[in-house]
Amino acid sequence: MSTPDIGIDLGTTNIVMTYGKKGVVLSEPSVIAYNKCTQRILAVGKEAYQMIGKTPAYIEVVHPLANGVISDDLLAQCMIREFLQKVCGRQLVKPRIIICVPSFITELEKRAVGDCIISSGCRKAYLIDEPIAAMLGAGINIGKAKGHMVVDIGGGTTDVAIISMNGIVTSHSIKSAGTQIDHAIQRYMLRRYKLLIGEQTAEQVKMKLTNLYDPREDITATVKGRSVMRGLPDAVELNEMELFNAVEDEIFAIIEGIKKVLEETPPELVGDISENGILLTGGGALLGGLRELIHRTLSVNCVMAKDAIHCVAKGTGIAFQKINNLLDGFEGVTVYKYQ
Image (cartoon, rainbow, N blue to C red; front, side, top):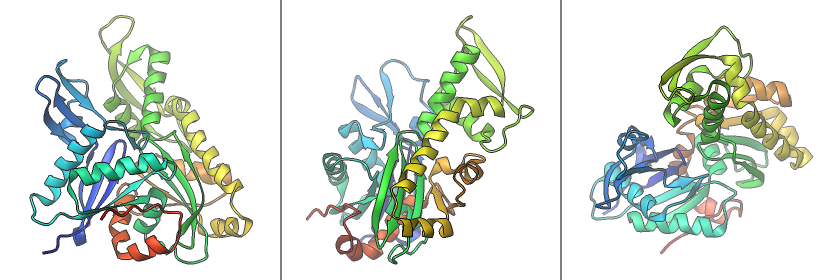
């Protein structure tokens, strides 16, 4: 008896799963809530995310991943196991799983991710670097001697890589990503307006108001939180220019990372990048004006991947069809095979 293969994009803020030919079947926050007294899991995903900042002391809501790697092995295993049961239920035959990891993590951290997946329930586990999965998910043929550049802006990290001949030629990982941008907004609101806001509010403001290319002062949004001075609920009007000032350092850290990779790339491949442009994937790629800002700053065209949020997860599913090439064709993707 066979069972469809599962591909997992295990992100710091979101987990996306593909299931056989069905494609993406799950996309939820990578959050877990548990009772500290009884050690019982209460919720995972969207349900747990809604509990952030709203629970009594005996209930803890946790992101078991930080900066693209597992920070709490046990909770990560429990969370993945719950998601796997949501996707495939209880089956006699355990599935094969490919899970993507940031290209910068150590061999020990990769082994920890593999062990976590095995413990969560599967018969074989493979690891694939996020830039490779992103390219596959975008439908780009990476097997030719032609350079392609991908910038995958996730929740915990931004991966920048040049790919050619089924392998990573050069890459760089940046800590500036979705979560750090949210924190920058929180710090700005506290410093400028003495207003405390939560993670969810910062993310909502980021998605609604970000304009990185041509920010305006006449476009505003209401931000609600708690006044530090009075200790009471308060609200302020924030405009696009202020938000740009809040996130500017994080955004330009990403652009500097792209520039660094281009500087380390062989000249022939740089010519290919100039022709093909830069592929943007991940949730951070959806920030308003980012594509135009990169083009204006680096003079390189940018292309937004179709379904940028799910692009990496789709690539993990496609990787099963190319698994022999991935195992034998290059060293740039580290793949562990568990018997």
